Every structure is written in structure tokens, then in C-alpha cells.
Amino acid sequence: MQYTYEDVMSYIEEEDVKFVRLAFRDAYGIQKNLSILSSEISKAFKDGIPVGTREIAGFTDCPYASLYLKPDPDTMAILPWRPDSGKVLRMFCDMYTPNGEVYISDTRAILIDAVNEAASQGIEFRFGNEMEFYLFSRDEDGNPTNIPYDNAGYMDIAPLDKCENVRREICLNIERMGLRPERSHHERGPGQNEIDFHYGKPLKAA
Image (cartoon, rainbow, N blue to C red; front, side):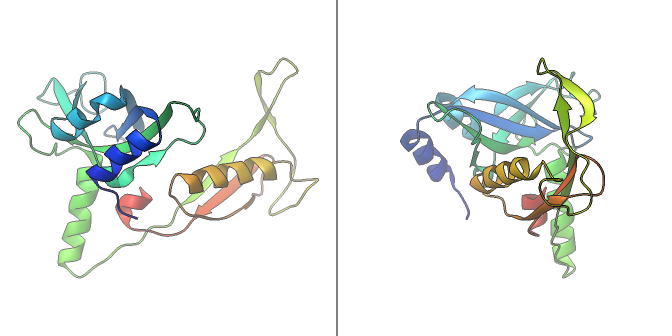
């Protein structure tokens, strides 16, 4: 489903959205974000929200002191782990210079250019992601440890696999955000898990 500016504005009003998280990535692909009140979203779409470049990895040589984040409405997703009262919406942003041009080191812009160049040569990409991660136990005081949550192996089942409920909750929340997890299972290592996503267009997959 594709969302528009009007869809975002209607959703904010109808669903009691109080905060909007504007997400972007630094030059190394690490996600960053800032939150604005939902009352500022019109300004974000029209003029962008300024962010200082001096503290963003890879942008320290940027000739501009600030870049401007403009949200892409098609990336709208509710953050399901946040409170239902005063919901939090998240959108990924494109980065613009003060004179309104797309910033050439914006990783989204780089990907879009690569996809368009490939399309001009008759090439179309589809990307599928496999996310692997580890779960660890907490001590009796609730503090994190480096002890794996279980000792299960590849595609083991309960009771060896103690992570299945966590994977289930992750998949359900991801689905609520508009993504398509296809399968999940325990991996080879203790506490190691995998969630696979349905393939999609590069920008959506990223």
C-alpha cells in the first residue's frame, strides 16, 4: 500500500498520534532519528526539519551546518511497542540542503539513483533480508548478561528452543508496521535466531 501526505495527516488525526519519529541514516548506514510533535508534521513536509551535520558520522565535512529532513509518506508506520494513548508514528526521511536540493551523500538518494540507473538499462532489483540476532539471559536482578537464553540448535523446537515466543512477538509487531516477515526459526548457535522477510523493492527492503 502506498501512502500520501493526506493519508498521513488523516491517520494522525484519527489515531491520536502525538509524536512523529523522523528516521534517517548516517553515511555508514546507521539509523538515526529525532522526534517531533505531530503538530509540526506539516512543516516537516513543506520545509523540512533541520538537523546539525557536525555530530553525524560521515557528514562532518558537509559544507552545510544543517540539513533538512523531509519525511517520505509512503514509509509511514506506527510503532506498536509504544503506548496506544498518544501513539508514535515513524517515517523515513530524505535529506535536503538549505537551498532545497537533495543531499548527494544521503544514503536513500544514493540507492534511488542506483535503482533508477539500473532501470534505465532494463534491470530491476528485488531484495530479501535475513535478520539474525542473539538473545541473552538476565541475572536475578534483571541486568543483562552474556549468557545465551537457551542452548538450542538449528530449527530445534521447544522445550530446547526457548526463544519462539520472542520471535513470534517480533514477527507480529513487524507485520503491524507494514512489513512482511515470511518465516522464523532458531539458528545453529545458543540463543541465535533468524527472521526472514519477503523480498521487495530496494527502497522498501532497505
